Image (tube, rainbow, N blue to C red; front, side, top):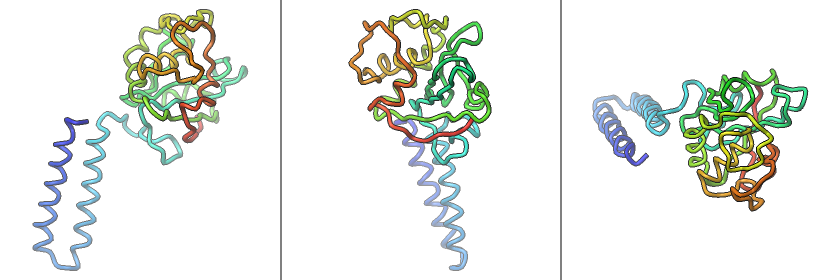
Length: 217
């Protein structure tokens, strides 16, 4: 982001100069229209600078005005009769705005989906809830992006939370926050010596995350 700041200032400078020159030769009746047009274009340019990696047409959660942010946790209840036959599922928005998660389908448990692909893994009409971390979200997102390929086997039987190879959705996200951001996202005082299950529902009740919005698959 620091590297982008000079470019951001350059864009602003060019538009200020352009606006000043154009307005000097325009009639008073044209001034408001000219300024509005320049500001609209400037806003579009600034958005590209601030968010150059966003996936096209997937910047906002469907049906909402809420922008995706790296580190957001997406939760779905996914009961026994639902999509993946497990109780609850969680995923994390990566720094590249892909959705990272672990599930039992395919030969490798770790997954990277666009938001459209991720929604397609759910039954039509399922409600997906979004929870945002109060801190450390971007570091957790980066860890997930860098390590999802190491989650090879989908296994609930491996109770060691520090084992990445044998993994499941909520364990993987716990690891992302613990190793990426340096804290136990459950708020229960777990360390990586803990053995036991990390439940998906934990991400809906922990004080480390707050509810943001929801959308349908």
